[in-house]
Image (cartoon, rainbow over all chains, first blue to last red; front, side, top):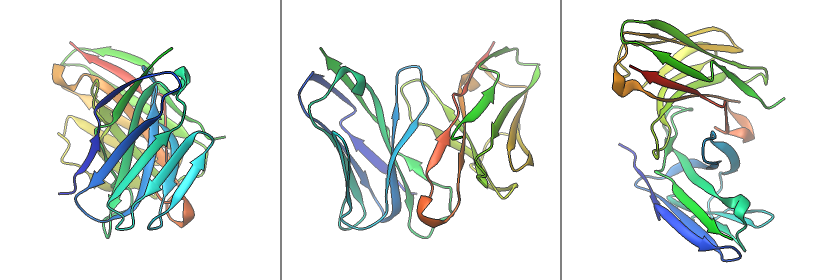
Length: 113
Length: 115
């Protein structure tokens, strides 16, 4: 079945440092979404990437979708304490039923002030 | 309104109890989902309803029974649960098709404890 691997599992940074999480799929994806879950909270949608090689930016966050549509990354520039949480990618394999996205295991980010 | 609501927020039940979790959205989304999330793990898909019909059942035990009374409501009926079923149960909805793809909006979840 489809596997979505996400690394690293944990990342501890000093406030102001950059942070990157990577998502890799064993199969070509139709699209990929990124979600953020704060401690004690629920996943909140950040972005969706659909096109090969797509790059999207949201303020300090930069999202990329690989040319082969098998990998993606989320990069945060100059982290702040508000960035704390677990970041999940979720992707749907090409030609599978709509709605059947597989979540990566998540990267938990802690930021030391 | 991009809100998905879930009730109750917390639920404690015994293994012989019957209870129901409720989810509601008014975004006109035609896909609704149930996920189970254990601590420090990603959400695990249980069921998907598309246009009020069950389209995906991820081999979930029959002690979990989903129901979609209409396009805005989703229920999860619980019966004879086991302690290992204790988890955060998340509901989500999505607009199917078009540029929105599978962008899912999650509710706050129900924290379930089975004793």
